[in-house]
Length: 133
Image (cartoon, rainbow, N blue to C red):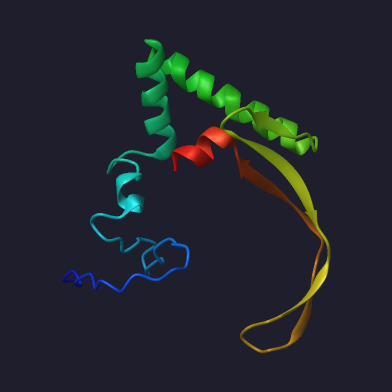
């Protein structure tokens, strides 16, 4: 399949939105887009990349870096399951929010449906993270 040329659109005053997903789950992103620069290197998983960063930053073994990352993620997950707020000063905070039941529509048939109440995790970026983007 040949690559489609990237069509530049005139600047609009609206906030930028991420690139839309294509059929295979891949994204079509302009070469100079910040989404392209922030992406994980090709062939590496996100978690594997983080393990490598922790390993390089702490001069520890790969096993120790993986255990550190797993312990952090497990702690955050368990705290959120207990409905506790997790706050990482400067980075951001994670908290569980309740969504009430509501009415919706089946887009295929137009039929009215009832959407159950649920819980979701909300992330709010901290001051350092917001200032750095």
